[in-house]
Length: 427
Image 1 (cartoon, rainbow, N blue to C red):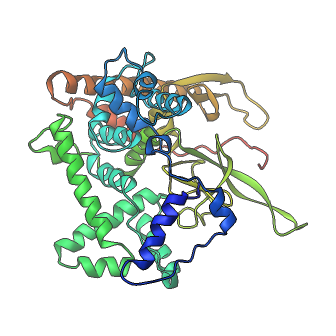
Image 2 (image 1 turned 180 degrees about the horizontal axis):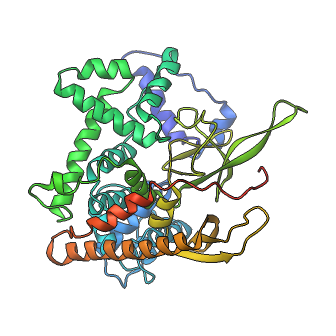
């Protein structure tokens, strides 16, 4: 959401007009708007999300010290509501336990200089042996999009982005393929030509490469990956894009979009038509940003997308999104999966079971009873595998690599045909 700046910032900017010689400063707002602005900008701790701050707080103080108690001693303390919200989100992603103590996963997340959700994504990428693509996506989400969109070449730039996405229905896969293409071109001394033809920003790609190297070194320092021959060991499944997008689910949850049908009228009093629509649990009806590769899609195989960033202007826009398999959400999102039995109905004559993530009916998945039991069993084993891997790292610095068969089972489940959701009325 866009906010007005402070009066002090406006005055500081005005000084730039006369830095070298007398000049004029034009402000694109009225004098009345200037008078309504805050005299000074509030402290950063009062303006930003506090997940990273709270995580670092728990590293600095004992588990018995609450984050609210610690941060209340700051010169400009954040609001109790903001601290409580940050603690709740850290509990939701497994960084804090119910008593607000750091978990083993949380300690490793605090070691990475990125927001906690992205840190979790990186750690899961190492555990599930698809680290290289996850590092690229994590670096880009932590910095910025490498694609550029020149005013006179916007359509060509959008086509370049969609070319990199292929049929993945994923902005994140698009930036991954763009980075990999750039590194390949660099090895052939065609880097500058590549970025010009593909509407990419050289400086951004170079920064992403540096951040990837930094994350990799930090993982080695924290013993999350072995120091020697780590590339082959943690990239066995790096070519499986469905698994990579499943890791995105683990990090980005609960940033989930549900795809359905919506009624839209064209003009005042125009005839209503049914078209694809998007909803989130917290915002209701949303739209995909025009720069997203999914913005013009008319049909999605899966009715679920995950995203990292959203903005609000005339409405809420999802900036980046990836279509994910329902199995990815069942196996990697939330804390648990709960089962609700349903008998046959006129619209679904065969018996089916509804699985919900954390008991939330908004995220409901319908499947055959036998498949439901398989998915619940796999989810339980994955939870054990993650806990085992993290605890092994914490205990002796060695990452367990004895879960190949389980990861292969997950890869197999991610290839299952997606069942169409039960019929619903348009939103």
